[in-house]
Image 1 (cartoon, rainbow, N blue to C red):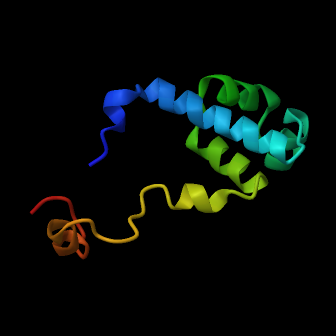
Image 2 (image 1 turned 180 degrees about the vertical axis):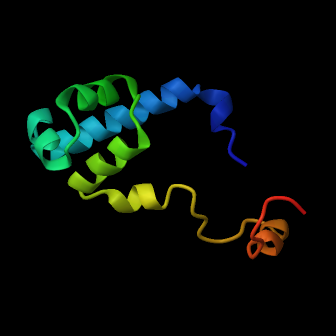
Image 3 (image 1 turned 90 degrees about the vertical axis):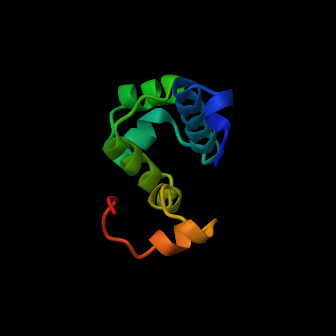
Length: 98
């Protein structure tokens, strides 16, 4: 279990993700305008995401695709290996209720 939620608020984590996206965009030498053209996401949405971390999941996926980082998004809730016996037992379950 991660204790990251004790250290940072959801808004702080979102801002950090937006800042990471901006850093990645700049490292690829892309302007917001160019990313907007490549992704189909408006420049204003990109700016808001980079400064506040606020974005729809659909826009995030479009930007990640344009930045060649879609794999990071598709692995977001996918566990690589069970961390406990309980997770291993539940790995094949189809529903959340017992």
